[in-house]
Length: 147
Image (cartoon, rainbow, N blue to C red; front, side, top):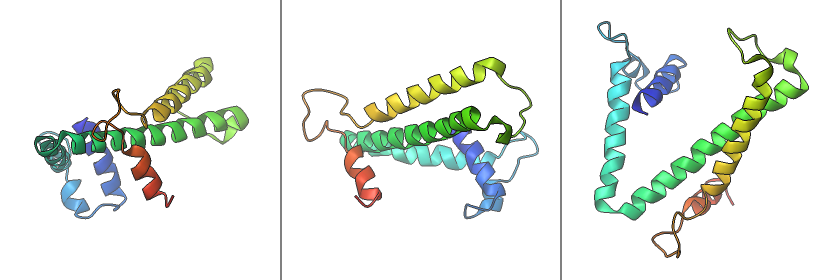
């Protein structure tokens, strides 16, 4: 997971979307990797995991919100590609490789799973629901959207 996030961080660095982008995106000549981005994401992950020592409820709330955010971005992006593939495939850029006739079914299955997971990410993980076991994602998402 850390390598995936550090790769995204390095890509954002190229577009200068991140502070200290030159330091973060520096490619180590020995490893041919953005080592600073890998270390930064590992440190951020470690700090977030330390929250679990103080309160597992706070940690679960953060994880729940992260799951909602990830499934929202996946479901929206896959659905947009699927829509474009069905309505105007000539507008999609040419790919180096493709799934040919399996592209639409794979995108449809991916979108269905992402929307399914997005729906269930708002629900509590255990029953009976108490103040500590309830999912705070609904509150945080509605709070962030101005609702």
